[in-house]
Image (cartoon, rainbow, N blue to C red; front, side, top):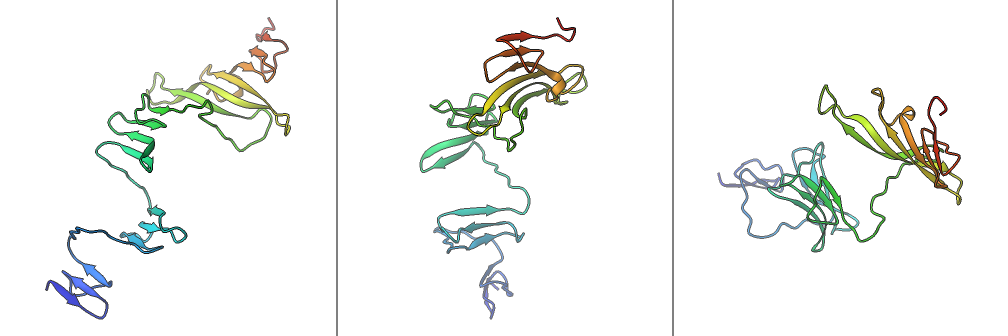
Length: 212
């Protein structure tokens, strides 16, 4: 039986259609598929579907029950119109933002100076947002020990009179660089530099544990 019409719908390749159109086999289309507002292409999982937006039918939602895999033969580009804003360079395994030719694992290109923001939702004095270098050790190249870090800290959180500082931490004795005990150098909001101290009392203040 090639086609069957029941009270439920039209079946092609099946005599017991479960939908208005039920096809058991492959479909070859030479035209378009049109989805009405808030309608979906549904997959086996009830939570995995491609849906048009009820508020704006020109928007598209891709929802998956678990993981979403993108497996192009080459690159994945994020475009608005014909302008590319980001690229996943599959050949070189690089990510580019503002460029389609990233030169490192992550390349950010822009004409402005305000390019990367580290936003941490805290307001405690002394707290910071940091960049940490994690590398291997003698036990494993993937040990990801925190060797050194730069932390952009709150020195004064007073609204309208905020002041910031930069802390440089270096690992010692196996202690991770995000620990307060690994602090190496501080640049305060006043421009003072402290080596071995977080509270320099001059333009350059060097402090050693033996008070020399």
